[in-house]
Structures are given as C-alpha cells and as structure tokens.
Image (cartoon, rainbow over all chains, first blue to last red):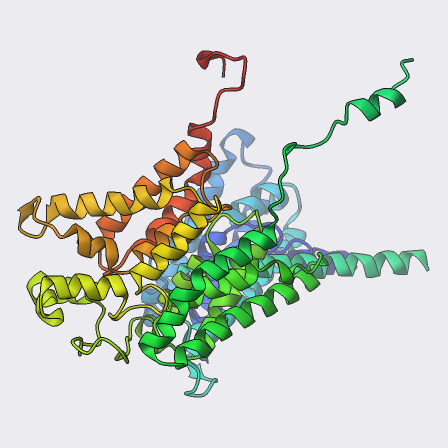
Length: 207
Length: 332
C-alpha cells in the first residue's frame, strides 16, 4: 500500500504535470480564465488519464510495440468521446465553454506520456494509481491557476464575487498574456518549494 | 614548464570591453532623467498639478520595486543608479493625466519585476520595461488608459480627445476645425498645448532633451531621425485622399512619436548594437507605427511598434554582425 501511495503522491507534487514536467501547458493557458472551466477540464483529464492507463496496462502484452502509439491514441480517443458526450448531455454550458479543448484532450502530452512511460511497463493497479495521481496533480494545478486568474481578472471565484466593487479587475489576467506570466511565476514558486522540501528531507537523512 | 608569472603582468588577459571611458550607468541614467524633466514639468503645467503625483508615484514605486526585487534576488542594491527611476518616469509620462493613482504603481511593478528582473535585470531585458508596463496597463484597464482630461492651457481646444483620436474617429477636417486652423494646430502640437499623455505633448521640449542627449553622445542621431522621418514620409505618401496628400508634420508631432523615437527607441539595452542595426530597427518601428495609426484599431502605435521591434532585435543583431578583422566576407 505504501508503494501505491508513493505512486499517487509523485504525480501530485514531485512530478506535477504542469509545474514540474511542463506537459500539457496548452490547456493550462487556454481554459483557466475561470475556476469552473479549469476544474472541469482537470477532472475530465483525470478521468481520461486514469481510464487510459488501465486500458494500456491491460493490453500491454497483447500489443506489438511497433504499433503501440496508434493503439494508445485509439484508446484515448474512445475515452475522450465518452467524456465529451457525457458533458454535452449533463453540462451543456460547460461543454460550450471548453469548446475545442475538450476534443483536444486526445493529443494532450501528459496522457500519452503516462501511457508510454508508466502504464506500458506496469501492472493494472499501479497504473491506475499513477493515472489518479497525475490527474489529481493536473487538476490541482489547473484549479490554482484558474482561481488566481479569475480572482485578479474578474474579482470572483467560481463566478461568486469575492472582492468588493472597489476592485477594478485587471483584464490582462483573463487574457493569454496574464496566463503566461502567472504560470511562469507559479513554476518558479513550485521549484523553490520542492528545493526547500528536498533540503528538509536531506537534513532529516543526516540526523 | 613555462613560467607564466611574468607574462601575466605584461599581458593582462581580461574579458571585453577593453576600452573604457569615464561614463557610468548612473551618470547616463540621471542625465536622461534631466533631459526628460522639462517635458514632464510641462505636463504638470498643461494638465494640472495632479500630474506631478502620477509622476512621483511612477518613479517612487519603480525604485521601491527595484529595491525589493534586488533584495529578494540577493543582488547588490542599485537603486541609486537611476535606472529604475528613469523607467518609472518614462512609464508615467506615457500615461493619461486622469489615470487613477494606483495604476502607475501597478505599471511600475510589471515594468520592474516582470519585464526587467524576471529577464535577468538591467542589461538583460528583451523589451523596453516602461513600454511593457504601459502595454500591460493598456490591456488591463482600457477605459482608464484612454480617458483624457480637459487641459489647463490651450484655450482653443475644448475637446477631451487626443489629436490622433479625433483623426481616427472624425477625420482630418474635423481635426483642423478643433484647433481653428492648420497653423494653429501645428503651433499647439509644437509647443505641446494639446491633449495626450502626460509627457508626450511638448514637441519642442522633448526635442531639446533629445538633442542634449545626442550632444552628450548617449544616443545616436540616426535612430530618432530615421524613425520620425519614416513616419513623416509614409504618412505623407499614404494620405487620406490618395497618394502624397497626407499631413506629415501633424503625424510627426502627434501622439508619442517624439518621446518614443528619442527616449524609448534609443534604449541601449533593447535595440541592436551596430548603427546599421539601429537604423533597421528605427525604420521598422516607423513603418509599424504608421501601419497601426492608419490601418490599425488603435489611434497610436508607437508603444507597440517599439515593443515588436524589440522582439526581433537579436535577429537584426545577427543579420548586421560586422565581419571580424582579417576575414573576407564569405568566411564569416
């Protein structure tokens, strides 16, 4: 169990898809202008990555390595279509807000990367937890970016105004430029955090 | 083994530059600030004393952010060299006089922390920090950045729009009417008794400051001359009523062209190194300014054109690289 928890934890912090691996930055910019779209995108990706990891892991011995990438893509596309149809049916507003980026989950680097790096070499249960961890890390990162951008760019979080009328929202934050700047500083901050954690770990090791 | 201790003293091998003179960063920066002061003070005279507060907030917050960033980055504190002060002053001079007091501070934050120190500090920034600050404010608060005030001078101008705004929205005829007659318009533009950003209005004072810097050899005369000349020629050729019907004098003196050409497009850090490269830079900035003014959505394009040219400065530098002594053209 300890091992599985480590696999899960790795995706959230040490190998956070956005802040450390810097994979799938496109959705991190494009759909994080508000917290709700960021959260939906994060959860959708979490579902796709976990399900795909399970499928890839299950079929890893049946697939000839030469054709593995087309097989991954087919599997991802199937799952994404499922998510798309579900969102379209139960949350049409969000489906509209996410637009093309929902379909683009198929080509998100992080999903293919986890299939290639982890799921194709490990059994089903670790692969499941790897997908869950990576998905959680991705969701948390997107949620953080979305909250900050919505707070500064529109004065609200999840559409609820939290700063008073005195605040004149800085539109740059909900435009791509603000997203780029914010992600840059968050990556820097995350780097400082992980370095600090490593220092603490090293001290523990010494003592 | 060869004894090198003697040679070390004779041949002092060091990093370039090998030829140094008496100039220092702080001397240049403070001189530029002095060159800008008359035009800035004219802004206060033109728009009222509120403007002085905007200028002071711009400079003060820029220095403060410089101090804090250098403290955090654990670098030597260099707020005395005047570079942050100059950035704050240039930024504030490019803002409208009615701007809320917190915006120059936000602009200074973006200019100093993001555009300058995130890129590595003085000498490493790709873009002109003051213009990045202005562009970010323009995107963030478009309404506040395009609201112009009534002036305390300029009795014949009652409108609260800038000359370029009037030109964009109501046409050239209306522009002349606003000022009374064409000579009146040129006079207002030359002296600076017209609407616009705080420090951009007075052509004559900016020219004086610019010529002072050229005389001190802090800037090359080629850059402002080529940039203003390009704008003049192109606006004359592509006039409103067909070829060669434009009003180059108006376009050369309106908007932020003079302050941009003399004080922004000559920033030592963000423009090409060689004269040839700088001329290409100025030419490109002039063409882009005219394109934005005549065809674009914004009435004024000096800020964006200089930023765009900043972004291709490394390319220009590579293109005009001088051939090393002793090598033929092909053997680069």
